[in-house]
Image (cartoon, rainbow, N blue to C red; front, side, top):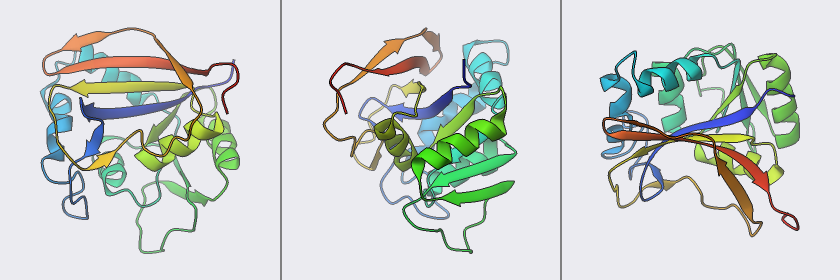
Length: 194
């Protein structure tokens, strides 16, 4: 079986992955930092510690080309050997990325290169635009949603722009911890979907 391409995303009940006004210096938008409190408060031996260790086993990362929140996540939380970005256009040379950054305009090529670089380890996906592109193209295998009991009210949404295809999800497990519920899903498309 091929190594999975897996979205890791903290989000509130209202589907916003960053608060309003996400920009450099305020990468998670106004009040968006609340979505990551579970990382700082995690018990290394508890459910969130287990999820965090699993995320660190990532072999490569696919992220949006311009998302401030994705840049913040990688810069502050993980260090992967490679970074792919399925951008519609090449990102500015002023955009700094850790590791060996590659900007790929074709989502199929992006998924293939990231899987190859990751070897037998999972590929992490972060950022709404990257997740949407991979999901539409049928490359996203799993989604690990870290559900936070809060409503941000506005900001960047995770599941916008998916098109009209019906996408089925199978819940793999449920891990409850203080202030977060970890919900990993396996992605598959129902018959007749795009």
